[in-house]
Length: 121
Image (cartoon, rainbow, N blue to C red; front, side, top):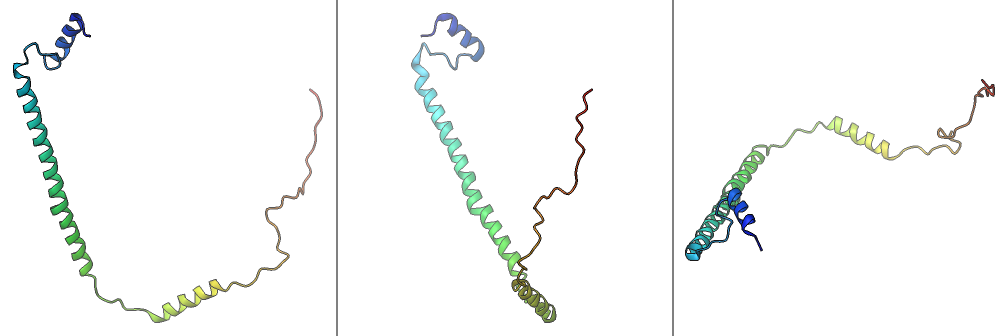
């Protein structure tokens, strides 16, 4: 339960909007006005979503259709280059076999010596 000192602090910082009303004569009107404001806000949000979904989204789809329909011409194919690339791809697929005695480049063999110093200072 809030003490009188706490209620006065709440009134001091937040005004009378958050304090319990001594006279509940207008409490129903306050709830009704908040409900109406909430419904207006929900209606505005729904209207914005409706406009986005049915107008802006449709316009972007129409723009994509127009852009795609302007480029419906067939391109001329350069057959000599096409054959060259096709042959290179076939050569890449048919690689020669690897020899069995391939050098292992990841094997570490110590090839140099280093001096060991055991002199005490």
